[in-house]
Image (cartoon, rainbow, N blue to C red; front, side):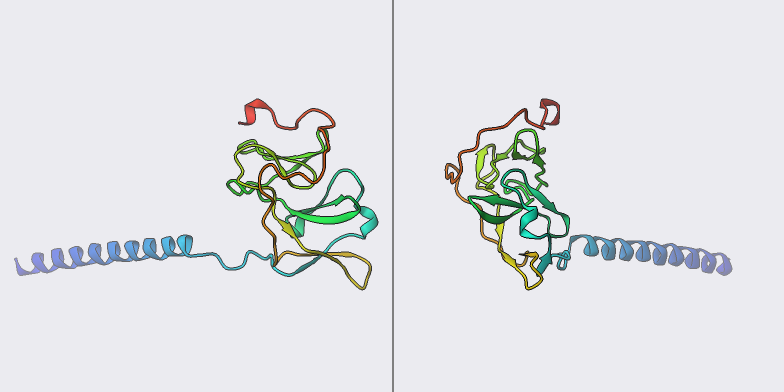
Length: 169
């Protein structure tokens, strides 16, 4: 009879130890998921294209910098591709010549200024410099917050239909 109790105790303790290991693994995994992320790989100078590659219309996407290069009144500007509303990626729509957020419908002109939508400001900007090799460099470590709604430095009407459809919203 004593033998059966010992076996039962061994099994109970084995189950308890197994449950404790599973709980520990769950806590470890949850901590890994919830702790603040380290630098996402951005931060520093990102080598891009020669200044001549940035036209007076349209935008040049720079994937490594998660930004777009645009030329506004002769000046080359780097706009963050992150929407200032909830952080969605904002693509450039060739047909309308605007940045259109597919998540919640914010629309920005080529200068990154908010035209419509729920975003609290325009697209953020990164400094751009020309390197010794003649290429443009985007400083992704620094950024200037986008301008307040209603602030416009360019007056470019839409050049065509929007890339967003009503089914996207």
